[in-house]
Length: 389
Image 1: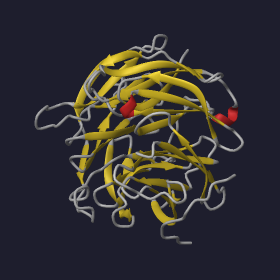
Image 2: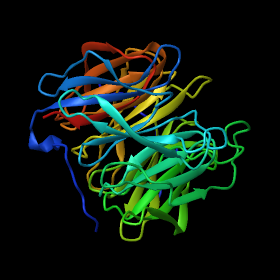
Image 3: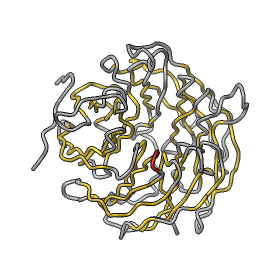
Image 4: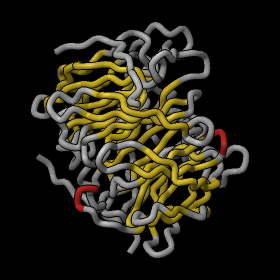
């Protein structure tokens, strides 16, 4: 029986793209290196790797790909030859020149070789993304409440930041929203804008992106506002670029925005809970990651504390979400999860139980089914995919 969900919020009515990963609708199976970002406590040694067979969903075993301290979030270059990582515990005042790391991928083994490091432009970097052309790494600094843009050389190495922009303001939560906390940075499908959910000020900031020059500039309008106390954390574009889905950490909600690509503007259309009907936000509950399925038909969000993945069907016309399933992640604190490039498998990283669990995705309904696989990875908090030769 389909569960009942509650709608909780307000409701109001060309750059080069270099894809290297197969789309789900192409039906192709492939083998991938999966890289896991981790926290270095107490047993993690850095970035781990495993092999995923996308035909069977078989994953593992996990091995150290590169030793590093708190390489929490990872991003892959469009050409698949480089992986970038943030050092979440870094602070430019204490560790000048550190915070973002560039690695070269050894295609056959998946080993990572450190190319260089650069400053993240602020303390506490927590998220990064490579632009669609592979020229720029964009970084969100949680503790610093800022964003940065770093150029990428032809050899994959990082240059020093060309842009560092600080946010300003606060919101209503007495401890979590006393100042800005940029929590993620995402490039629009046409590569013209970058969107930044800031947990501390209840805004999604919008910046103009010049990938060729590796610069960001404030846009007008500069942001889209969320209800006070929402705590926007991460966001996902629908693959066609027409809608943006923002997951709110503090209220355990998902906000739907219509995205006007030409103007770089966001218009709110719906807000839904990520929790089952009858469940309320309580101490220890928060959301974490949001991912759009490659087909654009489904959306997934993770609940920490409740330790589940919420599954939604996406209305193709208006972008509205219809909740269809909650699935326990098989562990504690799913800070992140990822859908493989073929759209067949979902990998949930359970940070506080040191496991990665694999779910099969029904191509017709989007529903998740546990495969029974649980891979041991210490403090896993991110997963990215690179095709194997």
